[in-house]
Length: 238
Image (cartoon, rainbow, N blue to C red):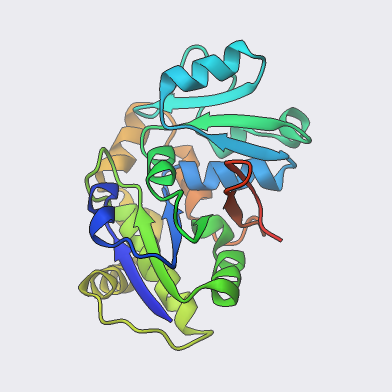
């Protein structure tokens, strides 16, 4: 298997190949939030990149989660916290979701052969699913407004470490080497390591830094969100 890491959606066109399995990661917080929705029984998630499209879904009666710049949008039912999407609120329902970075990355990669959403909270299930189906894997970091982020790169290193426990993979990419070295520096206490990151400071500024600990906890859910091209929705991979 070949593995590479793309640090920003703006760089993705330079990585894209026909048979890629793309894993979109937005550690703070869209990936964990998407996993929480589906783990709590949402039937599907409609990921949209544009606020106006989310508003149109809201006018048609859909449940909508919407966030920009770490704050819940005023028209939305939910924001971008995994704690918003309880089983009582989302079980059996479709949820429309738009965020500052994560859903834009999903939109950029939706033509990939396989598109998964991953983070620390579903890493074991994600690695297993990747081993089952992938030939070439691109971890697509959502970053922040097309710029690289420490937390998403850190996940790339952890994913690489976990993958190598199961199979042999080609690690020729400099990006993978960078991510692995970053993870080795941070693995004793990832939360502490990320407290100096740009996005952690944004979480503090918006009073949602308590989400960070959840977003860095491994294997709190066992679902792998997969983009279904027939319905254009994210569903639980089986």
